[in-house]
Image 1 (tube, rainbow, N blue to C red):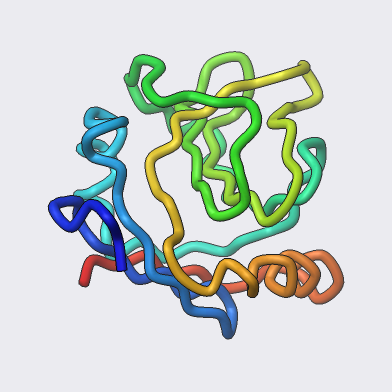
Image 2: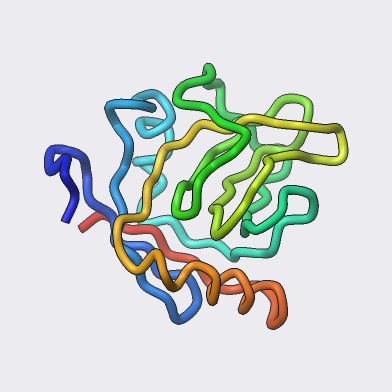
Length: 143
């Protein structure tokens, strides 16, 4: 159970794994406001190329007109960040282990806007599944 019950609660299904999560509306209000209309959000997770132990959703040429808020280059396991676009393609990243967020152009920072709050012990298994078995379905929905 979240220690901040006023934050919107989410359910994230990634492959066969299910996680509870919270939207970080206090720490990243503009990022959350930009993402919330997209829920329920369906996409595919693939393994990161440059950043370490993470899975990501490449959003290509999409660009969010967002400032940096609650941004990090080192998301902790269970943190989702949005890179709004700029010097690299727009993307969402979910850390399942050690991450140093980067692209072929170098270090990046993304806005931490979702925190997983349950089943964090399953994150390494999710990461290994994506790495060895390929893209997995993702669904982010409000509960």
